[in-house]
Image (cartoon, rainbow, N blue to C red; front, side):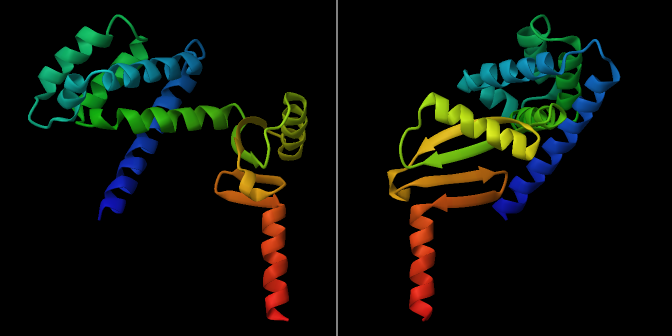
Length: 187
């Protein structure tokens, strides 16, 4: 049951993030990056105060009371399009989804900019030159701009493990040894 609720929240967040992306696309004077910065600032502000977090997530706090809080905190510090977006979220009683909406908006923006996130795990810490070489090759292969999260796991012995979205490419020595072991066991 909790899984379906989480999935529903993600679906709702994707819809709201799509709506915000469409709004920002209608007006070229609106910076999508500035909208993302405002969303991050909102999330950071809310997360910085347990009291504020409680107000946002408490169904017994009225829409009007929440709107007063939003107005005091954000009206003069964020772009009008983002403030109006918050206003509508509050009216629709979806203010608590702002955290997931911000994440989904960031994903949409990265897709818009042809950016993809990749995790690369190596057995040792790689030099900056080697990291840049790997990043360049992956970028050329995928024809995308990439953001890499570098990780070290000495259990893989040698080689690299790439995680791109939900796809994992395991080119580690450990994986090859395990595969060889399965082949030998079947013989």
